[in-house]
Each structure stands twice: as structure tokens, then as C-alpha cells.
Image 1 (cartoon, one colour):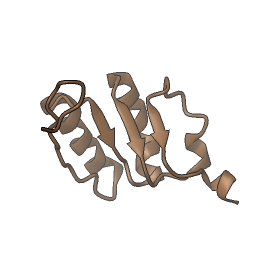
Image 2: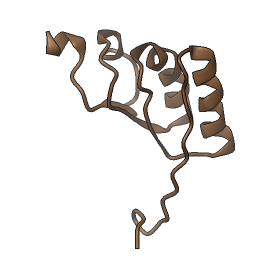
Image 3: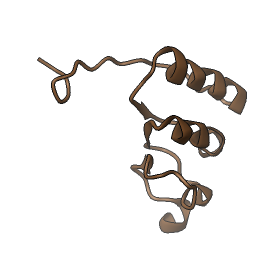
Image 4: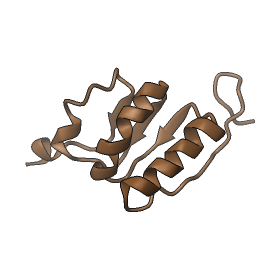
Length: 92
């Protein structure tokens, strides 16, 4: 009976890889071809610093469980980028 707010939920999986170029390709597929509403990830702070501006420009909510870089704290994200882990500053 799943779904959210009366809409079916479909899981689309893409691998960000280990470099910004592979992450950009995966992100393009998610934003353009799949037209996703929410992204879980990226898993790397380095990748997040590269792709979050593109995700924010697309107006897509993004939740990353692993990115801890302090540089992400001040990123202008319009409230669309959230983390479920404390930044390196708070962990220190």
C-alpha cells in the first residue's frame, strides 16, 4: 500500500562513483531523464561540494547521510540540502 501523500514512490538508483565527472553524469540522469523529487546522497563531501549547486538549481531536496565537510555548512542551498550526520566541526 506504499506511497507518500497519495503518490506512488519509485526508487531510482545511480552510482556517483569516485570523481566529480561520474557524479555529474549520474546526477544529470537523475535530474533530466528520471525527473526525481528527492535525492539521498551524495556519499562524499568532495562530490557534494561539486554537485549540490546543480541540485539546488534544479529545486530538488537532497539528504546526505555521510557528508561531513565544514565547507558544506555555509553552502547557499535554499534549505534543499540536509545532512543526517554532524559536520567535522561539530564532531571535533
